[in-house]
Picture (cartoon, helix red, strand yellow):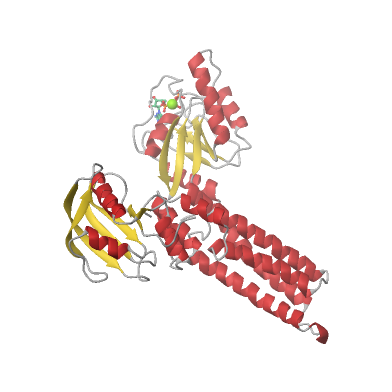
Length: 451
Ligand SMILES: Nc1nc2c(ncn2[C@@H]2O[C@H](COP(=O)(O)OP(=O)(O)OP(=O)(O)O)[C@@H](O)[C@H]2O)c(=O)[nH]1
Ligand SMILES: [Mg+2]
């Protein structure tokens, strides 16, 4: 998909202006091309103050101050010869350096191509390459930590340990296959079945982390619902930490959906404020109520807000009934006043808060995180968070279950070994030892240029 022998160039820093911007080159000619661009470069890994050539769109040349660092293959991010030119962080200027590099023989890099080279050169396995993209995209500190963890190879190690057990078992099965005439089994079927059950349990432990991991990686949508005037918009603003939605004492204030990203307990959540649910003859408000119902249907979690200062009304009961089958947290708002709504008979968590004073908001945040993750996802980091990894692990698990059944039913070693071999191929795909080109392309497409 990418030609690995080209010398590639791209701006490695984000688009926009900054104190410095970095142009990166990688490939066999990286140093040779750099020599044509800069007045001076130092020894490998030594920064040199230099002047760099800038070529504008109409072919005019100028120079800018720059700091140049060169890395010799294989001791670089990509494993190729690499040069990094740090200049002033102006996009036109950096483009001009890239243009000069292209005139000197470099090709503009595709998104993810630098990391793809690191993968090809064995600097990173596929899991770690994917972690680079996750780390760059992380929004909450916890997401960043989980990605950094994967970059360190935590998941690679866990999968390697499972694969090693499988390899050992497979070796013994194949030894039996190699000496068929001796009628000797290097490993008893019952022992094969027991060992496979153990390996499946290891995979199950990894998969159990997956739900938490995906939540951490991809976040979730949380919709605030309830009848008019219970304080949905006030609660929304309190959780967002800004005066984002209009609040008045007029029931039916909110009509449109209002959405904001919030970091709650390390989870990156999309919080949605909605119109208060009631029957109304106002055409605009009716549309708002309809959108509110749609938003509820698409949410992972619903916060059902009640006004604890008033007895439950028919509108309250309808929202409660409509969301009964949903993952939800019931919020008794206006807890700064008297409790006139009494106990809500329900198994779902009920949290009393005051959007006005902020009391109870921490308890609500915790209830949201617990409802979504089934536990506190910050306690220990999940090792697995990516749908591709989950699907391959589930495939491997199915192969191993088939092998176990075959062993129990007295199938020949050859049959059992074939299933185990297939499971190992799935592990190889996860870490990228064997991955189809279209899968690789899909993975690296997620990257931005220069990474
Ligand atoms: N005392 C008290 N008043 C609150 C609290 N939260 C909201 N209010 C008041 O309740 C009224 C309605 O608040 P909103 O946040 O607009 O309620 P809403 O549910 O979004 O209403 P609609 O958009 O009409 O559905 C306002 O006058 C708020 O100041 C609270 O915790 N305590
Ligand atoms: Mg509102």
